[in-house]
Image (cartoon, rainbow, N blue to C red; front, side):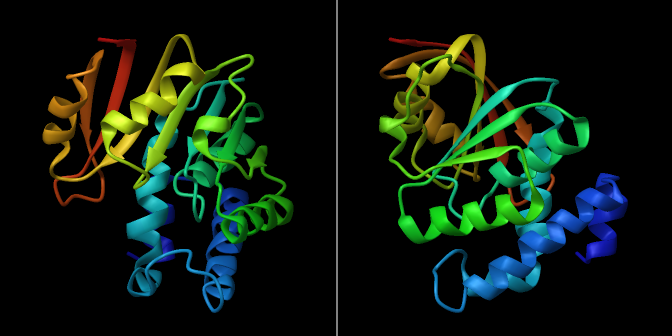
Length: 205
């Protein structure tokens, strides 16, 4: 997928596309000394990373507060922040405990003026005060563990959005041992059997 293909499929504004350009440039620059993404995936940024992250932005609503756990190189947290920027409201907290990755996220946030805050801490240390409307994660941990991180952070009526691969049903079954929740699986735009698991009504089993 090219930059032009991504722009055509998503319909993002010129300003938002330029923020994606900054993000990609910084990933390439920082990857020379920091392990942000698999080097083999850099050439497929627009499909493997940008589109995969952008698809979560369909859930962005005015004024919502999100937490992206294990944000790493910003997938999908920075895409969410860019969508909020285009919409004119909202905030995302990018939670990343590895110092170099947190510094990278802070650099992208500064250069794009995205409405995001970097929390350089472990997910379980994030202050739940005020709660979050949505908690998301990509390639951070198995679903049972993710639900443990997300549960204290979610407001009443809030949801989790977790990007998962082809074995997502196995993770859902494992999570139901200790948790009660409703789960809708939305097929990923990037294929490969991947989904976005939308978790609602989360409670301990």
